[in-house]
Amino acid sequence: MSASDLSPVPARVYADRAQVWPARVGGTHRAHDGPARSILESMTKTAVTRAHLATSPFKAPVAPPTKLFAVGDRVTHDVFGLGRVTTVEDGIAVLVDFGGRQERIISPYAKLTVL
Image 1 (tube, rainbow, N blue to C red):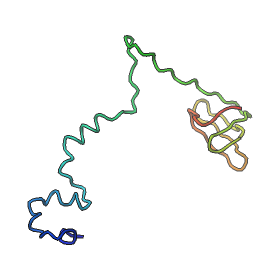
Image 2: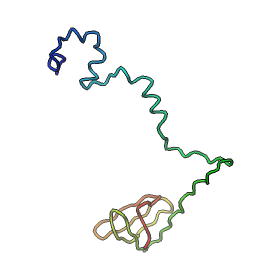
Image 3: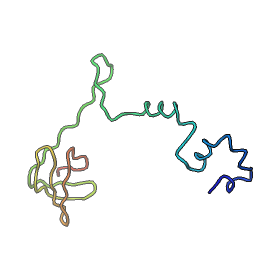
Image 4: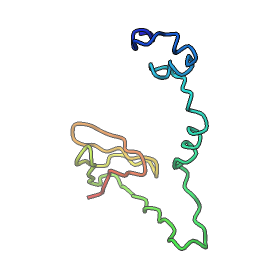
């Protein structure tokens, strides 16, 4: 698709906008992606947890307790349903038999609960 196909305006009118036109059509170059984009990227939240300051008026975030499983425990999983733990890899993962399938659930076991 060319500029002449999209608009009844002659292509010579857009000659001075040659670098901006591909962005309108779907190209990768955009004239306005300079400083604004880098500011937005720097303002987004990062995955790094910040250290709690001793002088902060807010309570320090509490880490959730680690879940411990033993072979033979009955468990429920939010996606797979009811199952029984068959293998425990200390602090790394557990292998659970959900009847028709076996799944390896990796720590921190967010969707896995002991019954």
